[in-house]
Image 1 (cartoon, rainbow, N blue to C red):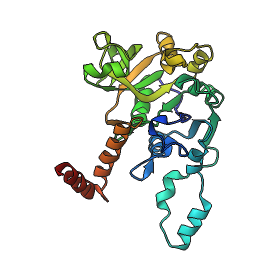
Image 2: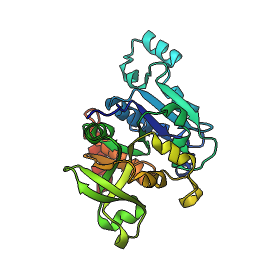
Image 3: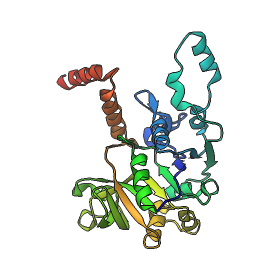
Image 4: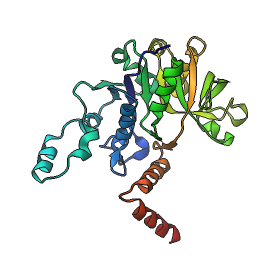
Length: 291
């Protein structure tokens, strides 16, 4: 059975980034660098690797620099060319005209509302969602792993990670059904931040989704949930039973770059893996630890 291909991806990037003030007063948090690449670049690269052709940014006021990052910087490139500098470092920041589309989330009403703001561009197509705060590092990337699973089972998919049971109360957790394969599990329910004793599993939702367009119709009429916001989790929970839902256990590493400690961890981990600086960074870390 063939399934309609995943060619569109929605990136909710309207948040204020208050946990990183004052750094995010004038710079979108998605442009804060992990080593030398902005956080949003990692997510866009992950989507492109999976065959995504249309990038949809749900932005807010003061976030235009995100789009400019993927534009041509004429003065910069002209100066680099004159000086004989290699421009290939900018290749990942280039976008084909029309491949990046932005819509505004004018009021901060939650993740579900942000996704609903992209409804006109999504149309009747299945689409991916990537939360840039969640830096997912794997080979292949998280969305590529999910697209592979989607091509097998279709429907809706959620990326999950297994965590120790005593940590589940901090996350959204799936209620698992039948085990389809080593990495693919049916989803029978979703629970947001359950008490440890009541958690249906230790599989937490990890910021990557492939959803059918019907979710937009659910969000259209959905009331506010936790925190007074329109929650994507609530909309997905309503669809379970009407459409197939599966969880894909991600094979790779997740870094929570929405927190300062997670951001530092990601920076250190990725720097240590770099051939051009890993040895020096390791020496620096060992020296600091010894001191």
